[in-house]
Length: 156
Image (cartoon, rainbow, N blue to C red; front, top):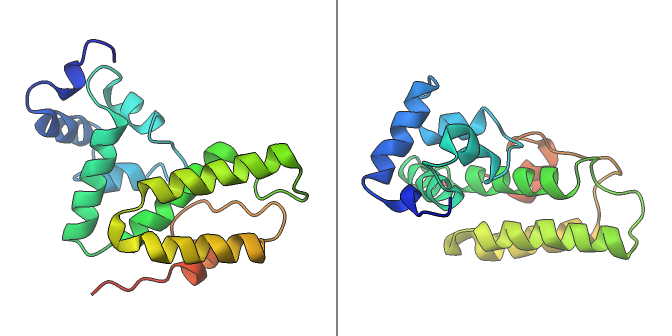
């Protein structure tokens, strides 16, 4: 939104109001009901002029830290990035255009990763590139079997 209203007032309260209006008790529950929606699509659904992707993601991180589910959030963000960059799943062959799409998805994933999980994400990224998943692989949520192998839960 160009007028900056998304950051005015009590935006956190506004965000939770929008989520509750849709029948969810947390931003996490709302986001997990749409596991492949981007950080652009989620706030647009909540109120294009009321909510920003950075706000949604910040609250998702807060909720994940509070519930000790940060690794799950990190896996979920990879699902979102892959869904946007590779909607048909993992490529069969890697030409320059596809390599760029993969790099974009993995780069954005890393950029959204909290500092506490950066090294684990770098390792998972290296594994994905060294031993690519089967062609067409498209995780639909954070509990995808391959994602759980790459980034198992460690939180207490």
